[in-house]
Image: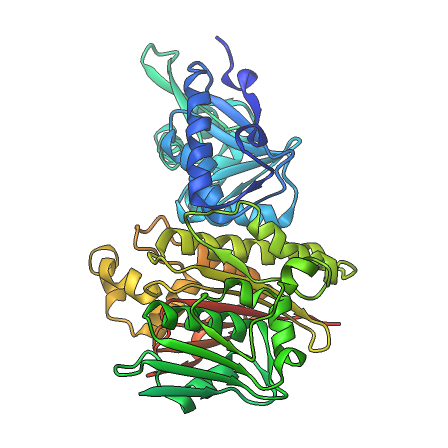
Length: 187
Length: 304
């Protein structure tokens, strides 16, 4: 079975923009349509890494209408994360846009990662951290790693994280023969 | 009936313009057909006052009032500065200027030449200038380039222009142009970022949808609602929008910028308190002479 993260695709946001500065809702919607077209032209792709190389600046409205809207639209089905972004100003703008729409976004810097826009709830933080350390995770693995954690409890936490856009998941067959979900990080 | 507005013989910022308007009466008032604005010797217009005055003058001309601008010093005085920043390029052609309009556009001649002065830019949704925020912000790097925080300052100015100008495109609903300008005042250690439009005003565009979108906010006063807009964000389009003004304020607060918002008959002046703009540190002026639209100015304090 192919591990989903092996097929994460890197695309440059700059290729979908007319110039290196993302300004306003109208431009944002044009770029959104182009991004949407690209995603739909790659139906088997589950995770997209969006590179900010060559993007000089974006305002909050543009950020909101492009990647944040895209991530929100596909929440739970496909994952979008950001790479090649280190400018504090830019990060602030993307975070503000993501926060407004209640959509978490992951920023990857090599192997390190941070989430912007929305934080997981206090109760689910540990579960998310656990999931982020490996490409795929099952509730049973988390339950085993944390003393006193039941599989049902772990399953609920991962499900909540999936519903809120922090993780993706797919169905799998459990050892017992029933249905089990495999959760994976975005990136 | 005519209305005469005498500007003072000194530096005139937005507050100075307001005082002159209050003394002169209400130029948009019923029965006023003739408006005379006098620039005495020694009068020196600042950028935020200039674009509000430009908006006002063009509004009055639009309502077919006769408008005269009278420059006591002729080309020697503030007229030269106004010409330099493009005031006359954007002034409605029906407006009379005495002694006479400049014979050439100083802005066109010297564009971009002075690191501290930026020309007035026109905002019109049917003629969107995609490079506008960048051009306006270039003045920041030209005049503040050696500062340690230059990149951050430039980023903040760019985003404020981007958001404010996009708001004019999205919400303004007027055939009249809006204006944007930026000026660095080295002696005063100030950076002024100003956008003016002649639309309905923030309150008029927001309030109609508040009953359905955010009923709790509908009962707030205009000042409290305005502070809410800048602190938490608000939009007539729903709760997942409305981050432009809030985002702009967040950037400006980092530089301890004052925020000046002129609405049709009110003005709210906010100074940063701790890390945000708050209602209890706002100055609010009510029942001001009518000025259509929304006029926003951020005044950054530049530490030496």
